[in-house]
Image 1 (tube, rainbow, N blue to C red):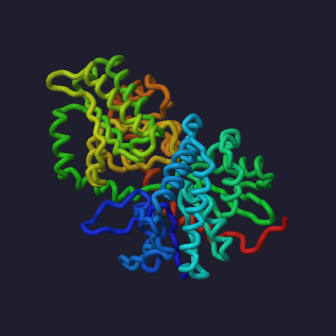
Image 2: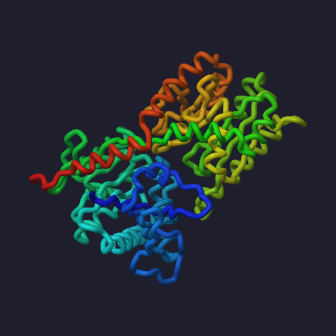
Length: 461
């Protein structure tokens, strides 16, 4: 059988004592069979990185990693990937910071990755590249002579041509994506926007999901990522005995829990969500003292100015809301910037009456699916979901809101709090069926099946 080689910015090398794996590692878990390989950055910064990747084997899987210099990491990761690409792809043009030297550093790191991986590839390998950090990687690997199938999956949103054209190197990015045999997106909207960009900016011919450019064909399609819903539901049930979950449940003293779990990022709509909670307490005072809002948002990318500013804003908003509404024995908003283990989160989701998932823009957002999977069938909670999360295309029985409208979020949370149990069960049953159907395993199988069907010969120009 052909070997699968996964390529991503970071490599989740298994650690001792069952360290928690990241979301991508969990999604691709079933693919990590003996003989497969995962390649990417080690997470280490060194003055003189080795030319050859470092190889570590764990349970039959080879983890191949390369180090970066501090300057390479700054231009590649902080500068272009997260200073320019991330805001652009999340529709935040005002936050995009483009510097030509950062783009050159981005290309240089992708070239380093390609040069390091190519010597350890086998001719019949299948290469699956992940996310916006590595858009040029496929073209560079192909230029080094690799002829096997190369697929790419974009976990974040994509933007229409009118927005992508704000990026000075937009055309180069679209050319690089067209160099893959297959590009997957979270929703058909994102895939269609990419095909529109290829047609408008490159003059490519588009026929359904197929894009023809310079004598070759590639496919751009939607393949929504999922979770292992059954195992997550089981984990949520077991987590009832988790110490932190028990402490939170006991502290509720009969009150309903509203829960949000997000990385601290300006794309997640956290200030609007905090404002919505304040509006809920103002507009619906009958909920005062009867609810708690717990927001877990671990810090991330604090080397980027916008993220530091976001934390200051959230601190201010939380203080204002608690200062206005709290009483001696009731603090309405609990806000933590510390990460929690996956098992603990599953238990917290399970006791949540309302799950608030209101990003301003998101590729998918698996928190929405995890909340649904964790809920008890007999007395389920209600999901309040942003219309701009990829998950909203599937989870239509959630209460769908515009995340830019705090009043709309407040009204949806109110509706969820007063919703009869019969309606909650009906909505939950429909949502859970969808989460059980579009699993991580289905996502992986669909992508690799599509990649195996790549054209074996170049199409006529």
